[in-house]
Image 1: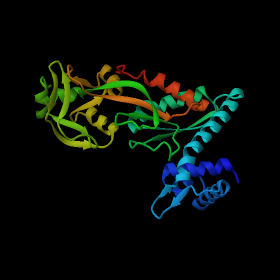
Image 2: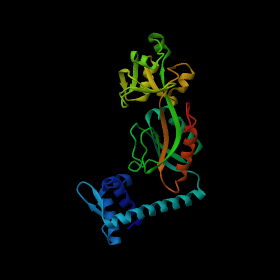
Image 3: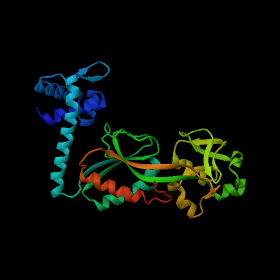
Image 4: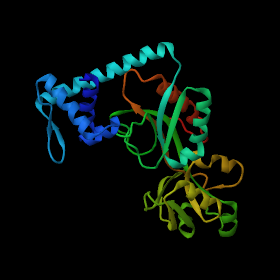
Length: 300
């Protein structure tokens, strides 16, 4: 029996809640995982898992063994990575996940730069606005904007980017420019379809204000929303990393420039391990430096 592989099959079955989930993570079949776990149980002389029709559960022996098995696997991976890295440059495959708009706007170019700097590394960049499960989908590094942070991952803060109200010069020339937050109600307000459909929350010189708006157009893609703003369709609240360069070149203009919306926080998420593989460490350091330099950033 391959004890390490059997132990990994057991740990993944527990973490993912099923033998089939462990099989997908290991790139094998459910019967193979079942045989590995059964062989591990025979070698230990104890039953580790209760296999129900709907889910798995740990026996008392399995509960005690699970924590130690996780630490043993981490120690083995750390030791192997340390030995390899003493004589090797950063190499291997990385899976990176990020939101679509940030990926297309900035991250794609940064990944190509990173590949030029590290010719022995391969990258699979997964752009999706849903948050990919790092364990089940074997993600090495995730870029997260806002929302709650998973408690079982390390979250490295990159800073925050204020949201600002913007519109095209053509829209403002045709419809006039609001001078007070309450005047937004008379304008076409464009919003992200998956977001909050309530009032727009703004922070200004007199404090916080909730402004009712009219949204005839909502879209579930941030880049399409930005295109709509650029085409003159209305006013929108956008993070500064998305629009700072467009404001500087005059393609967009700030609306109510003394007011900002809730800031958008960015984090890099990765596994909580004592010894990350070298390829993961160099990517984290590279992204932390480059992404912290995106326009409009405010330090935490």
